[in-house]
Image (cartoon, rainbow, N blue to C red; front, side, top):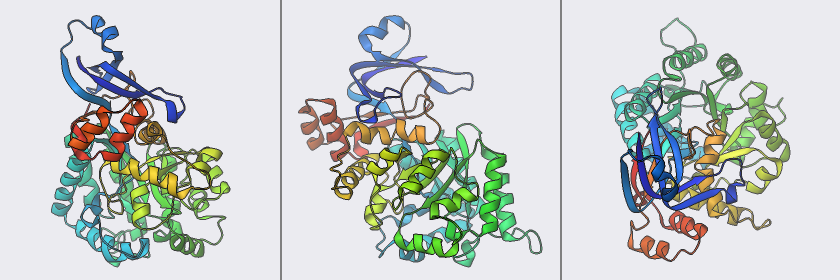
Length: 437
């Protein structure tokens, strides 16, 4: 058992996300190891009230710092780290000219290993302690990322990228042996093999991962849905309704379905623990389908702004009532920093929904990248918060990390002002330390 004394930020469960943050100016976080060897929160609250209950527990004191939950990121692409900031006219040209050529390099296991090492280190350096991310269509890319996440004790969910059509031939799922299973069947066999190897090992989880509907055949989507039905504890991840051109393509390929989103539903890929990136161009029927299925949206504001895809409709999501959380979407996204992502989400709320006058509160923005994202993953009460029973993943923040940040946070007269100053002015320098349970 050990304890940490600092200012503390955490969230009340089952509260309005815009007003759920708790801030203890002088707080104590007490953690202990559970039967599985994971550090979990035993107690959290004001130092004065808790210290006497734990007189023999060693305390690390961090004056002038803030302990906050580790960030939860709902969508990224570890193979796209090297294409961040590549110029393109939009989503589909960006995929063709930058993403697919880079992902083709992941056929080499050594390349996968060094990319995984950098990606995990960058996530942790920026305070991300739980991540749902894409690999490539190469099984070696999945093995490398799981291995590195296990080594660093990062809670990570990933899976083999399923695509058996409409992509460069070398990137399509491959048959392992000439004359053996066809590529579509082999992709499902490989997915199940990886799932059985890694899902539930330490802090790792498997995600069934169709890239997006246009790059999977009916047979592959059907097989993915059957796999999801056999393994209800695994996750599902894909993309939907990011870009008008993409939507038109999906509608041409799947004309029998009522919408792009319903394509996934009809193949058994819309349920709890299903995370769909973007979800921008929805109508209320789509929003209701998300709500009723228990699926959640990964909101990717930096990539949506960078690629000109559009604006996530927060007001529509809240009106109909489906779950969402924030994601960096590296490499269409432009930063690993949760602070950059939260600030971009604020812009999206202000600029994309001027008719509603939406202004996301700092507490709501922070919730979206911690407790709210954990809830969307089905991991509420496990990660993304510092309530008793949660895994003790946290970030140690230094509000004096830069001269401007120090000047502005010193003048903050409320919790919202303090949080917003860190969102607007923060980056990786604000994260003094990332602690993994």
